Image (cartoon, rainbow, N blue to C red; front, side):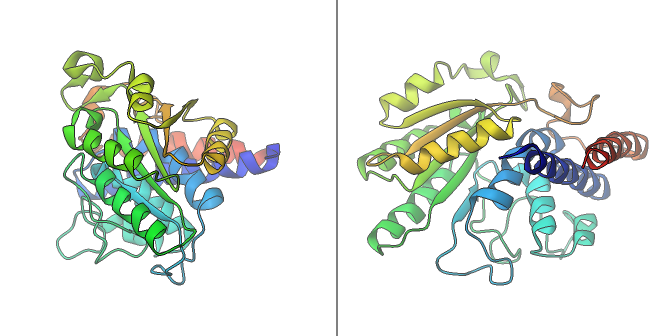
Amino acid sequence: MDSSEIRQLKILAAKSRKGAILGTYHAKSGHPGGSLSAADMFTYLYFKEMRLNPAEPRWADRDRFVLSKGHCCPSLYATLALKGYFDWNELTTLRHVGAMLQGHPDMKGTPGVDMSTGSLGQGVSAACGMALAGKLDRKDYRVYTLLGDGEVEEGQVWEAAMFASHNKLDNLVVIVDQNGLQIDGAVEDVAGIEPLDKKFEAFGFEVVKIDGHDFEQIEAALDKARTVKGKPTAILMKTVKGKGVSFMENQVGWHGVAPNKEQYEAATAELDAEIERLEGNC
């Protein structure tokens, strides 16, 4: 990627973060912290990596994405809106009764959502099923799934890891958002998961460790995953919870609390300033 392309991705990621703040503010509930930490990966996947057609969300040959940490859907929804799956104004109806965008992804009601998720640990199993189906059907689509680092404490994650390795699912990429915080505090204090790279390697994965806010590192990791044969890939990305909004960064309290009017305006102003700065460099 050249500097211009990286800048465009950064602009899109800032807009995705802005959408997550917009949605959670209007919902008066939701999970902004982990949404903001994952926004760069969402942006790269949907605007650079994945084979998609927003005009045909159920296109059989599309790449699949499963948000295993389903509560962090606000920035996924914003990314889908930016990609053209639905109108940006839908974000203001997040979590409202009867709205398209619910508090966890709903594959039946939301264009662009490939799997309904919410129960932590289960999304990765669904992704494994999709990847195996692709193999059995001799399709060349790829499957990506994003987990939280607190979610990795779930035993089902490791059952799925065994399944993925046993079935040689080299069309599967498991991405772990390691922002270091979960609802009850620091991950290392709740149930330490390190050394996470060694654990995934022991379960038969190719492992890549990156800075999850560096688009060049994201690109290199996903490019490498495409070259891996005979086993799945795990990308462990270090991130900052609440990334992009100064008063939310590395604050566990923003795991599942929506901003009030003052906080919404302050966060939006920060993100608007970042977008303006980046666009001014174009």
